[in-house]
Length: 222
Image (cartoon, rainbow, N blue to C red; front, side, top):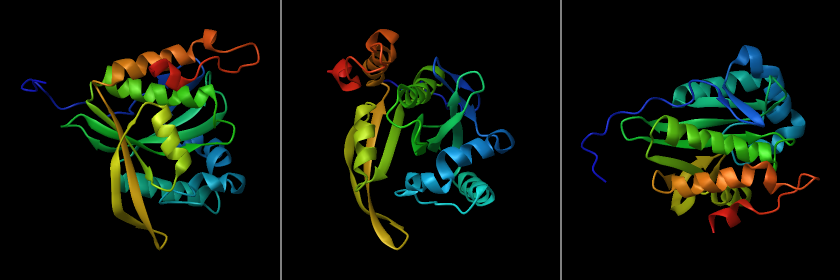
């Protein structure tokens, strides 16, 4: 690929990303704190943070203060996932390790509330973030990283079309324990096939009258 005309990319996550099921909105604590706390940070959702470097949280104020400080320190751009038309807050995800000069960013701190997990809304949220990065902003690389012991996150990465790239051994110390980090990514070359699979899977015709999928997302990429 000839990159002589390459230019720095715009920073992601600066405006809402509307879909047919959900809309992703840049984090605004005044609008989102109460709903976000109930969805992902209240005691009944504490398992959301099992493999995260932050959490769980004592109360909404603690959640706000910790997440806001870490996000600011690390340059995260966080999007809140809610139902369309100003509906219920369902979760959040952040663009991280944003490298505008290289057209590369990571999706991380993916916190799906219990009502969002394993739903078409969750898949659409991940599609909207990838589409924003590749189609709207012209990025070249999109990353997903997780604790190597986090089997659910590894499965999710592969389901969403990220390819496994390796394990960074002894990568971090979290709560006094070692973390080996599994790296996944998709590139601009991968994106057309990944996008087509997302669009085919999300189409209303892929779901029966009870809302069950007719064909898996992986099958559309096969």
